[in-house]
Image (cartoon, rainbow, N blue to C red):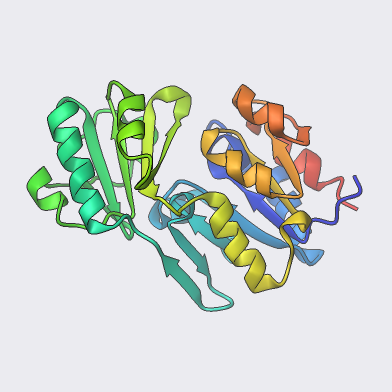
Length: 260
C-alpha cells in the first residue's frame, strides 16, 4: 500500500468496534502502531463523548482526536480545540413540532452537548449505551433547546421529514433504515475532519478513512483513500477505494498493518 496516511479517520460502530462493541487486541495494536509512526488518529463517530469514553480503551483515548455526533462536536485536546455546532434553536423547534404533528408514535431523542433527553422511555437499547438513560422531557420543553443532534426511532416516512428539512438540516438515515439522525445543515464527518486537517496542516488527500454506514459516505469521498468495511452498506463499498475485512475480522488492522 503506497499511501502514507498522515491522518487516520476511524468510525466506531461497525468499523473499529466489533459486534461485541469492543476494540480487538489486533485493532488496538494496529492503531497504536500507526500513532507511534507519527500518524494522527481521529475517531469520527455519530456517538456522544460519554459513550466513546466507555467504549474505547484508555490507551486509545489518550492518543485520539474526536469528531463526535457526525461532526457537530470536534475535540482535539492537544491543541485545546473544542467546537460545537448545534442545530439552530428555531429549526429544532420546527423539527420537533413536525414530529409531534406528523410522526406522533416515533421515539424522539435529543442530544444537547453530551446531555441526553427523550420524549419518553426508549425501547430500542441497541442504538444506545446501556449505562446511560435519557432525561424524559415533554416536547414543549425540548423545543426550547438548540440540539446538538436529534435522533428518531420507531418512525415512518423518513423521506417526508428529509424533504421537509432538506434546506435547514442534515438528515441521515442509518442502521438499516431504523435510525434517523438530524444535525445542523453544515455538519458532517467530512466537515469536522477537514477542520482538523487544516489545523494539522495536512491535505485531505493524505487522509485514510474507514467506515461502514451511510453517515460515512462523505468522509470516504473526502479522504484521499476511503476504506469500506466488509460489512458496509453496498453504497459505501461502491465508492470506496478499498474494501477490507469485516469489523469482526479486524478489517481496520488488516489495512493499517500494510501502511508504508
